[in-house]
Length: 318
Image 1 (cartoon, rainbow, N blue to C red):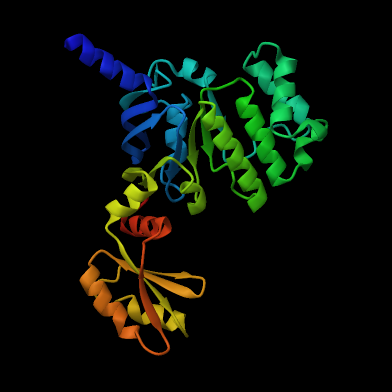
Image 2 (cartoon, rainbow, N blue to C red):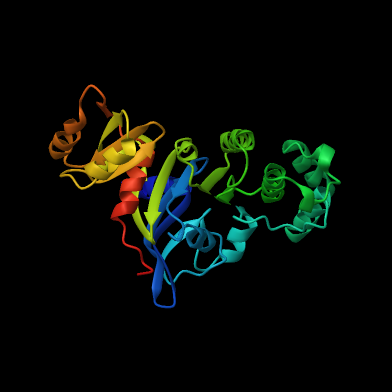
């Protein structure tokens, strides 16, 4: 019986690419990651969301061995985050927020340089494979410094993949690129996950968050919620009404201080009015039901939930 239990626990641990408990990181007197727990399954696309300054990048750096945590424990790809950071770095691809390659080198030269750093065997074949996979072959001699945002993104992803990592850490990889480049990027991420690669991605785009298998939301170092999109929305307990009609800016100003109203957000030609006390919220919203205005109960969106969570968070800079 004991052996069976041990095998079950071992199997569950093997299925996790990331298994961290109580991760904490401080800079000076400020805690930027506060006892964070995260479990990510192998082959999973896991979204990591939160406002700027929430600790997302710091946590990624702890995971890949660039920063040593001040507290907590855990494993990344089976390696101890406290004692085996060198091994972790060899098996992780990390795409930073800013383009971090040599702009006076060509795409091919940059990839060749990264392959040398990772001591990739059959380096030229690996470079050719990366160029082909990311559609960079025809641009191989183009200088990285003259690439558009979308092509720089492809180069960065190609560089992350050249040593065949088991885990990708992507820090806001689609910031500043056009919608088609974002779509193409996500298609490639889905292909990689289908091949068994694990992806942890930070993003501010709600449509990207909804493409993740599961996600976590942190604010100012604290984990606020995690789960599938449906689980996160349901757990928030938020009720949302949609208002349409004239002078919505004036309506927003008047409705914001009413009982039950926690947030009022403009969405195109509508207002989303949300709160957790559904009865008081309905009473306040229905004051605007008239020939000119229409009030309809709608499902709370992921964006409604995250704005609500952010509004409730305490800024650790204060």
